[in-house]
Image (cartoon, rainbow, N blue to C red; front, side, top):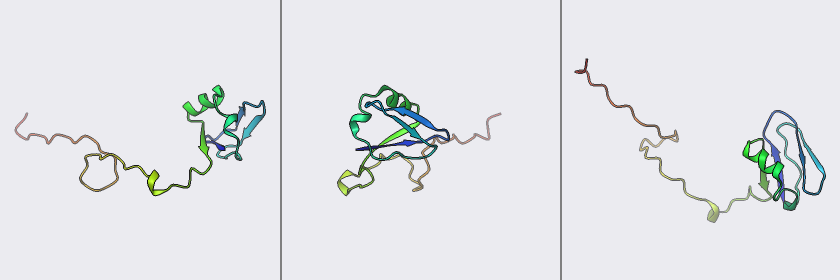
Length: 96
């Protein structure tokens, strides 16, 4: 089972594989749908690529400890969660 979330501020109309139309108001999530409704659906794939909709599998909110994946190190030893950015070279006061 899957749910489709409208991530935009505009209504979205989707044609499902069964031929039914799914109307999603801005920022809303559909009820649970069978995965067969969205599998190999070119319209759903296109809207996902454009980040207009998100497809969530049912039960995805339940995360077990085995499913947690460690994040790669950013190389920033400051300990904060800010994204790592390249450091500026110190300016040389002897340069004109």
